[in-house]
Image (tube, rainbow, N blue to C red):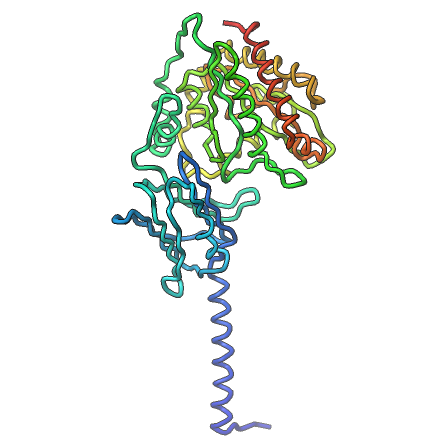
Length: 409
Protein backbone atom coordinates (compact mmCIF):
# COMPACT_ATOMS: atom_id res chain seq x y z
CA UNK A 1 0.00 0.00 0.00
CA UNK A 2 1.50 3.31 -1.07
CA UNK A 3 1.77 6.28 1.26
CA UNK A 4 1.46 9.94 0.42
CA UNK A 5 2.98 12.80 2.44
CA UNK A 6 1.54 16.23 2.68
CA UNK A 7 3.83 19.19 1.79
CA UNK A 8 4.06 20.02 5.50
CA UNK A 9 5.27 16.51 6.37
CA UNK A 10 7.77 16.54 3.47
CA UNK A 11 9.16 19.86 4.69
CA UNK A 12 9.42 18.54 8.25
CA UNK A 13 11.30 15.40 7.14
CA UNK A 14 13.72 17.43 5.01
CA UNK A 15 14.38 19.68 7.98
CA UNK A 16 15.14 16.73 10.24
CA UNK A 17 17.49 15.20 7.64
CA UNK A 18 19.31 18.50 7.16
CA UNK A 19 19.77 18.88 10.91
CA UNK A 20 21.19 15.36 11.18
CA UNK A 21 23.53 15.97 8.25
CA UNK A 22 24.73 19.24 9.80
CA UNK A 23 25.38 17.47 13.10
CA UNK A 24 27.40 14.75 11.36
CA UNK A 25 29.35 17.36 9.40
CA UNK A 26 30.19 19.33 12.53
CA UNK A 27 31.28 16.20 14.38
CA UNK A 28 33.43 15.15 11.44
CA UNK A 29 34.92 18.64 11.21
CA UNK A 30 35.74 18.67 14.93
CA UNK A 31 37.25 15.20 14.76
CA UNK A 32 39.56 16.22 11.92
CA UNK A 33 40.97 19.19 13.86
CA UNK A 34 44.32 18.64 15.56
CA UNK A 35 44.33 18.72 19.37
CA UNK A 36 47.14 20.10 21.54
CA UNK A 37 47.80 17.64 24.36
CA UNK A 38 50.78 19.33 26.05
CA UNK A 39 52.78 22.57 25.92
CA UNK A 40 56.30 22.98 27.31
CA UNK A 41 58.82 25.83 27.49
CA UNK A 42 62.46 24.98 28.26
CA UNK A 43 64.50 28.13 29.07
CA UNK A 44 68.30 28.05 29.28
CA UNK A 45 71.19 30.47 28.94
CA UNK A 46 72.04 28.89 25.57
CA UNK A 47 68.63 28.79 23.89
CA UNK A 48 64.95 28.42 24.76
CA UNK A 49 62.78 25.67 23.32
CA UNK A 50 58.98 25.81 22.96
CA UNK A 51 57.20 22.51 22.30
CA UNK A 52 53.59 21.94 21.29
CA UNK A 53 52.63 18.27 21.45
CA UNK A 54 49.58 17.21 19.46
CA UNK A 55 47.65 14.17 18.29
CA UNK A 56 48.37 15.00 14.62
CA UNK A 57 51.10 16.75 12.65
CA UNK A 58 50.71 20.54 12.73
CA UNK A 59 50.97 22.71 9.63
CA UNK A 60 52.25 26.19 10.32
CA UNK A 61 53.71 29.44 8.97
CA UNK A 62 55.97 31.75 10.93
CA UNK A 63 57.45 35.22 10.60
CA UNK A 64 59.81 37.53 12.50
CA UNK A 65 58.54 41.01 13.29
CA UNK A 66 60.37 44.03 14.69
CA UNK A 67 59.68 47.07 16.86
CA UNK A 68 59.10 45.28 19.14
CA UNK A 69 60.93 42.02 18.36
CA UNK A 70 58.48 39.16 18.18
CA UNK A 71 57.70 35.94 16.34
CA UNK A 72 54.29 35.08 14.92
CA UNK A 73 53.34 31.46 14.24
CA UNK A 74 50.03 30.62 12.55
CA UNK A 75 48.95 26.99 12.96
CA UNK A 76 46.32 25.59 10.60
CA UNK A 77 43.42 23.28 11.43
CA UNK A 78 43.60 23.94 15.16
CA UNK A 79 41.29 25.15 17.91
CA UNK A 80 42.47 27.06 20.97
CA UNK A 81 41.83 24.45 23.66
CA UNK A 82 42.42 24.84 27.44
CA UNK A 83 45.83 23.11 27.21
CA UNK A 84 47.13 25.56 24.62
CA UNK A 85 45.75 28.51 26.58
CA UNK A 86 48.13 27.65 29.44
CA UNK A 87 51.18 28.48 27.32
CA UNK A 88 51.19 32.07 28.59
CA UNK A 89 51.83 30.74 32.11
CA UNK A 90 54.81 28.64 31.03
CA UNK A 91 57.16 31.59 30.48
CA UNK A 92 59.54 32.17 33.41
CA UNK A 93 60.76 35.64 34.33
CA UNK A 94 64.34 34.38 34.16
CA UNK A 95 63.98 33.30 30.53
CA UNK A 96 66.68 35.31 28.71
CA UNK A 97 64.86 35.28 25.37
CA UNK A 98 61.05 35.30 25.86
CA UNK A 99 59.10 38.17 27.36
CA UNK A 100 55.66 36.65 26.85
CA UNK A 101 53.62 34.21 24.73
CA UNK A 102 49.97 34.67 23.76
CA UNK A 103 47.74 32.24 21.91
CA UNK A 104 44.60 33.43 20.13
CA UNK A 105 42.03 32.03 17.71
CA UNK A 106 42.73 33.97 14.53
CA UNK A 107 39.82 32.40 12.62
CA UNK A 108 37.73 29.20 13.06
CA UNK A 109 40.57 27.01 11.76
CA UNK A 110 43.73 28.95 12.69
CA UNK A 111 45.52 29.58 15.99
CA UNK A 112 48.15 32.30 16.21
CA UNK A 113 51.05 32.28 18.67
CA UNK A 114 52.54 35.67 19.47
CA UNK A 115 55.99 35.34 21.05
CA UNK A 116 57.33 38.65 22.36
CA UNK A 117 61.11 38.63 22.71
CA UNK A 118 63.65 40.22 25.02
CA UNK A 119 66.38 40.36 22.37
CA UNK A 120 67.12 39.62 18.71
CA UNK A 121 66.46 35.96 17.95
CA UNK A 122 67.17 33.48 15.17
CA UNK A 123 64.29 30.98 15.39
CA UNK A 124 64.53 27.38 14.24
CA UNK A 125 61.06 25.87 13.81
CA UNK A 126 60.38 22.25 12.87
CA UNK A 127 58.12 19.26 13.48
CA UNK A 128 58.96 15.85 14.93
CA UNK A 129 57.17 12.52 14.36
CA UNK A 130 56.01 10.41 17.32
CA UNK A 131 58.67 8.53 19.30
CA UNK A 132 58.70 6.82 22.71
CA UNK A 133 55.96 8.43 24.83
CA UNK A 134 55.79 11.55 22.67
CA UNK A 135 53.14 12.22 20.00
CA UNK A 136 53.61 14.72 17.15
CA UNK A 137 55.59 17.81 18.18
CA UNK A 138 56.01 21.32 16.82
CA UNK A 139 59.27 22.72 18.16
CA UNK A 140 60.45 26.34 18.20
CA UNK A 141 64.10 26.85 19.19
CA UNK A 142 65.06 30.45 19.94
CA UNK A 143 68.77 31.22 19.55
CA UNK A 144 70.30 34.65 20.18
CA UNK A 145 71.07 36.57 16.96
CA UNK A 146 74.30 37.82 18.51
CA UNK A 147 75.53 34.93 20.67
CA UNK A 148 78.14 35.54 23.33
CA UNK A 149 80.82 32.92 22.68
CA UNK A 150 83.70 32.34 25.08
CA UNK A 151 86.75 30.11 24.85
CA UNK A 152 85.57 28.30 27.98
CA UNK A 153 82.19 27.37 26.52
CA UNK A 154 81.94 27.09 22.73
CA UNK A 155 78.49 25.49 22.94
CA UNK A 156 76.59 28.27 21.15
CA UNK A 157 79.03 28.31 18.24
CA UNK A 158 78.86 24.52 17.97
CA UNK A 159 75.06 24.52 17.98
CA UNK A 160 75.10 27.12 15.22
CA UNK A 161 77.51 24.99 13.18
CA UNK A 162 75.25 22.00 13.76
CA UNK A 163 72.12 23.82 12.59
CA UNK A 164 73.93 25.00 9.45
CA UNK A 165 75.29 21.52 8.73
CA UNK A 166 78.89 22.68 9.19
CA UNK A 167 79.84 20.75 12.33
CA UNK A 168 81.22 17.80 10.35
CA UNK A 169 83.59 19.98 8.37
CA UNK A 170 84.77 22.05 11.34
CA UNK A 171 85.36 19.01 13.55
CA UNK A 172 87.36 17.23 10.85
CA UNK A 173 89.77 20.18 10.89
CA UNK A 174 90.56 19.81 14.60
CA UNK A 175 94.01 18.35 15.14
CA UNK A 176 94.96 16.40 18.24
CA UNK A 177 96.96 18.79 20.37
CA UNK A 178 100.52 18.00 21.42
CA UNK A 179 100.28 19.04 25.03
CA UNK A 180 103.21 20.13 27.10
CA UNK A 181 104.28 17.86 29.90
CA UNK A 182 102.80 19.98 32.70
CA UNK A 183 99.62 21.04 30.90
CA UNK A 184 96.45 20.60 32.97
CA UNK A 185 94.37 17.46 32.39
CA UNK A 186 91.09 18.52 30.79
CA UNK A 187 88.06 16.45 31.85
CA UNK A 188 84.70 16.79 30.10
CA UNK A 189 81.74 15.68 32.20
CA UNK A 190 78.60 14.85 30.25
CA UNK A 191 75.31 14.69 32.21
CA UNK A 192 73.06 12.63 29.96
CA UNK A 193 69.74 13.74 28.47
CA UNK A 194 68.23 17.15 29.32
CA UNK A 195 65.46 19.49 28.24
CA UNK A 196 62.78 17.68 26.23
CA UNK A 197 64.56 14.36 26.88
CA UNK A 198 64.01 13.31 30.53
CA UNK A 199 65.96 10.07 30.24
CA UNK A 200 64.72 7.18 32.38
CA UNK A 201 61.98 7.89 34.94
CA UNK A 202 61.82 6.07 38.27
CA UNK A 203 58.81 4.58 40.03
CA UNK A 204 58.46 7.77 42.09
CA UNK A 205 58.82 9.94 38.97
CA UNK A 206 62.48 10.83 39.54
CA UNK A 207 63.96 11.98 36.23
CA UNK A 208 67.35 10.73 35.12
CA UNK A 209 68.28 14.08 33.56
CA UNK A 210 67.96 15.84 36.96
CA UNK A 211 69.90 13.27 38.97
CA UNK A 212 72.84 13.03 36.56
CA UNK A 213 73.11 16.82 36.36
CA UNK A 214 73.39 16.95 40.16
CA UNK A 215 76.05 14.23 40.18
CA UNK A 216 77.99 15.94 37.37
CA UNK A 217 77.97 19.24 39.27
CA UNK A 218 79.28 17.52 42.41
CA UNK A 219 81.98 15.78 40.35
CA UNK A 220 82.89 19.10 38.71
CA UNK A 221 83.28 20.77 42.11
CA UNK A 222 85.56 17.98 43.34
CA UNK A 223 87.71 18.13 40.20
CA UNK A 224 88.13 21.89 40.60
CA UNK A 225 90.01 21.16 43.84
CA UNK A 226 92.46 18.81 42.13
CA UNK A 227 95.83 20.28 41.13
CA UNK A 228 96.57 20.41 37.40
CA UNK A 229 93.02 19.38 36.41
CA UNK A 230 90.51 21.52 34.52
CA UNK A 231 86.90 20.38 34.34
CA UNK A 232 84.08 21.29 31.95
CA UNK A 233 80.48 20.15 31.50
CA UNK A 234 78.66 19.55 28.23
CA UNK A 235 75.56 21.05 29.84
CA UNK A 236 75.33 23.01 33.07
CA UNK A 237 71.55 23.29 33.12
CA UNK A 238 68.37 21.57 31.96
CA UNK A 239 68.89 21.93 28.21
CA UNK A 240 68.82 19.47 25.31
CA UNK A 241 72.10 19.07 23.40
CA UNK A 242 72.51 16.67 20.43
CA UNK A 243 74.92 13.79 21.05
CA UNK A 244 77.50 14.83 18.48
CA UNK A 245 77.51 18.43 19.77
CA UNK A 246 78.45 17.03 23.20
CA UNK A 247 81.41 15.22 21.65
CA UNK A 248 82.27 18.29 19.55
CA UNK A 249 82.46 20.45 22.67
CA UNK A 250 84.95 18.03 24.23
CA UNK A 251 87.09 18.01 21.08
CA UNK A 252 86.94 21.79 20.69
CA UNK A 253 88.30 22.20 24.22
CA UNK A 254 90.94 19.50 23.57
CA UNK A 255 89.64 17.33 26.40
CA UNK A 256 91.83 14.50 27.67
CA UNK A 257 88.91 12.51 29.11
CA UNK A 258 85.18 12.31 28.41
CA UNK A 259 82.86 10.88 31.08
CA UNK A 260 79.14 10.55 30.36
CA UNK A 261 76.99 10.14 33.47
CA UNK A 262 73.67 8.26 33.42
CA UNK A 263 71.21 6.34 35.64
CA UNK A 264 70.11 3.03 34.15
CA UNK A 265 66.59 1.63 33.74
CA UNK A 266 65.12 -1.78 33.04
CA UNK A 267 61.60 -3.25 32.83
CA UNK A 268 62.34 -5.57 35.78
CA UNK A 269 62.51 -3.31 38.85
CA UNK A 270 64.53 -5.88 40.81
CA UNK A 271 67.57 -5.30 38.56
CA UNK A 272 70.15 -3.09 40.28
CA UNK A 273 73.82 -2.14 40.43
CA UNK A 274 76.36 0.24 38.90
CA UNK A 275 78.06 -0.24 35.52
CA UNK A 276 80.75 1.38 33.39
CA UNK A 277 80.83 1.15 29.59
CA UNK A 278 83.55 1.81 27.04
CA UNK A 279 83.21 2.13 23.28
CA UNK A 280 83.05 -0.97 21.13
CA UNK A 281 83.44 -0.78 17.36
CA UNK A 282 82.77 -4.53 16.97
CA UNK A 283 79.43 -5.06 18.64
CA UNK A 284 78.29 -5.02 22.24
CA UNK A 285 79.70 -7.18 25.03
CA UNK A 286 76.19 -8.39 25.94
CA UNK A 287 72.61 -8.10 24.70
CA UNK A 288 71.85 -5.82 27.64
CA UNK A 289 74.74 -3.54 26.67
CA UNK A 290 73.48 -3.44 23.09
CA UNK A 291 69.96 -2.57 24.26
CA UNK A 292 71.26 0.17 26.54
CA UNK A 293 73.41 1.69 23.80
CA UNK A 294 70.42 1.77 21.46
CA UNK A 295 68.22 3.50 24.05
CA UNK A 296 70.92 6.10 24.74
CA UNK A 297 71.57 6.64 21.04
CA UNK A 298 67.86 7.40 20.60
CA UNK A 299 68.34 10.53 22.74
CA UNK A 300 68.54 12.80 19.68
CA UNK A 301 65.16 11.63 18.38
CA UNK A 302 63.56 11.93 21.83
CA UNK A 303 65.16 15.27 22.65
CA UNK A 304 64.34 16.50 19.15
CA UNK A 305 66.77 17.54 16.42
CA UNK A 306 65.62 19.61 13.48
CA UNK A 307 67.72 17.82 10.92
CA UNK A 308 69.70 14.62 10.61
CA UNK A 309 72.65 16.76 11.61
CA UNK A 310 76.21 16.13 10.61
CA UNK A 311 77.17 12.50 10.20
CA UNK A 312 80.54 13.05 11.76
CA UNK A 313 79.90 10.42 14.42
CA UNK A 314 78.98 7.86 11.81
CA UNK A 315 81.59 8.05 9.05
CA UNK A 316 85.09 9.43 8.44
CA UNK A 317 85.94 10.49 11.97
CA UNK A 318 85.10 7.03 13.29
CA UNK A 319 87.65 5.56 10.91
CA UNK A 320 90.30 7.58 12.73
CA UNK A 321 89.65 6.01 16.12
CA UNK A 322 93.05 5.18 17.50
CA UNK A 323 93.94 1.95 19.20
CA UNK A 324 95.47 3.87 22.12
CA UNK A 325 92.31 5.91 22.60
CA UNK A 326 90.19 2.77 22.85
CA UNK A 327 92.56 0.97 25.21
CA UNK A 328 92.82 4.04 27.42
CA UNK A 329 89.02 4.19 27.50
CA UNK A 330 88.96 0.65 28.87
CA UNK A 331 91.67 1.56 31.37
CA UNK A 332 89.71 4.62 32.53
CA UNK A 333 86.46 2.66 32.77
CA UNK A 334 88.08 -0.13 34.78
CA UNK A 335 89.61 2.39 37.20
CA UNK A 336 86.23 4.06 37.80
CA UNK A 337 84.46 0.70 38.14
CA UNK A 338 86.95 -0.42 40.80
CA UNK A 339 86.09 2.69 42.79
CA UNK A 340 82.35 2.36 42.17
CA UNK A 341 82.23 -1.12 43.69
CA UNK A 342 83.09 0.45 47.07
CA UNK A 343 80.01 2.68 46.77
CA UNK A 344 77.37 0.38 45.29
CA UNK A 345 76.86 -3.21 44.19
CA UNK A 346 78.07 -3.72 40.62
CA UNK A 347 75.61 -4.89 37.98
CA UNK A 348 78.48 -6.66 36.18
CA UNK A 349 81.92 -7.35 37.71
CA UNK A 350 83.86 -5.94 34.76
CA UNK A 351 83.61 -3.09 32.28
CA UNK A 352 81.19 -3.59 29.38
CA UNK A 353 81.41 -2.37 25.79
CA UNK A 354 78.84 -1.10 23.28
CA UNK A 355 78.50 1.34 20.38
CA UNK A 356 77.45 4.44 22.31
CA UNK A 357 77.39 7.43 19.95
CA UNK A 358 78.47 9.78 22.71
CA UNK A 359 81.72 7.83 23.26
CA UNK A 360 82.94 8.09 19.66
CA UNK A 361 85.45 10.92 19.90
CA UNK A 362 88.46 9.62 17.94
CA UNK A 363 91.10 11.15 20.18
CA UNK A 364 89.56 11.22 23.68
CA UNK A 365 89.36 8.19 26.00
CA UNK A 366 85.64 8.06 26.82
CA UNK A 367 83.41 6.10 29.19
CA UNK A 368 79.77 6.02 30.18
CA UNK A 369 79.02 5.57 33.88
CA UNK A 370 75.64 4.08 34.80
CA UNK A 371 75.52 5.21 38.42
CA UNK A 372 72.61 2.95 39.46
CA UNK A 373 69.23 1.68 38.23
CA UNK A 374 66.71 4.50 38.61
CA UNK A 375 64.02 1.90 37.79
CA UNK A 376 64.89 0.03 41.02
CA UNK A 377 62.86 1.55 43.87
CA UNK A 378 65.70 1.31 46.43
CA UNK A 379 68.34 2.65 44.06
CA UNK A 380 66.03 5.43 42.93
CA UNK A 381 65.81 6.55 46.54
CA UNK A 382 69.61 6.38 46.92
CA UNK A 383 70.15 8.39 43.74
CA UNK A 384 68.08 11.23 45.19
CA UNK A 385 70.27 11.58 48.30
CA UNK A 386 73.20 13.97 48.57
CA UNK A 387 75.16 11.27 50.40
CA UNK A 388 75.03 8.77 47.53
CA UNK A 389 75.58 11.44 44.89
CA UNK A 390 78.72 12.58 46.74
CA UNK A 391 79.98 9.00 47.01
CA UNK A 392 79.49 8.43 43.28
CA UNK A 393 81.19 11.73 42.45
CA UNK A 394 84.18 10.87 44.63
CA UNK A 395 84.40 7.41 43.05
CA UNK A 396 84.55 8.98 39.58
CA UNK A 397 87.23 11.47 40.64
CA UNK A 398 89.30 8.80 42.41
CA UNK A 399 88.96 6.58 39.36
CA UNK A 400 90.27 9.42 37.16
CA UNK A 401 93.25 9.87 39.47
CA UNK A 402 93.98 6.13 39.39
CA UNK A 403 93.78 6.14 35.60
CA UNK A 404 96.18 9.06 35.21
CA UNK A 405 98.86 7.03 37.00
CA UNK A 406 98.45 4.09 34.59
CA UNK A 407 97.42 5.52 31.22
CA UNK A 408 99.22 4.70 28.01
CA UNK A 409 100.67 7.60 26.03
